Length: 142
Image (cartoon, rainbow, N blue to C red; front, top):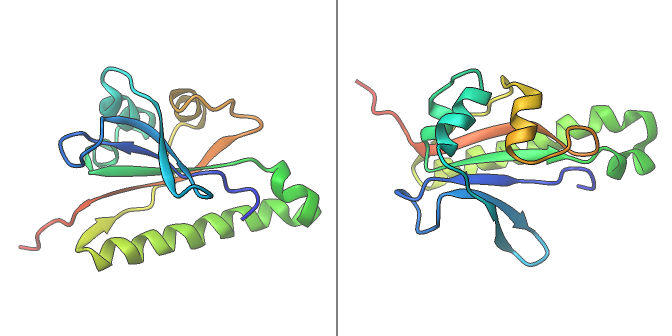
């Protein structure tokens, strides 16, 4: 995928052996790069997602950002149709991976674009969030 830049991820320190914060996945090196942390990050993420608390309460929240020009050179005007499909395919694989480890995932497209881009320190023009998905323990059925 040429234009899909993420994922960035937000990790809760009480669930994973990592410092709570924003990380970027480096695919060529297959490692996480710590970007930053800030006070009250989880509630700020939830607020940017229209106060959907579960977005900031899972073990990890994946954010996918895009850099459209990376697709435009190849697909021209069709790039803006291809980007969402690519991100959807990646998220579908996250659902499958979460299921394989007994976890749950929930794709989210309801968020304040400007607030979330600013929170993740993206410029909102050349690179912006297109999709996100928290992953955590599945709710127990009653």
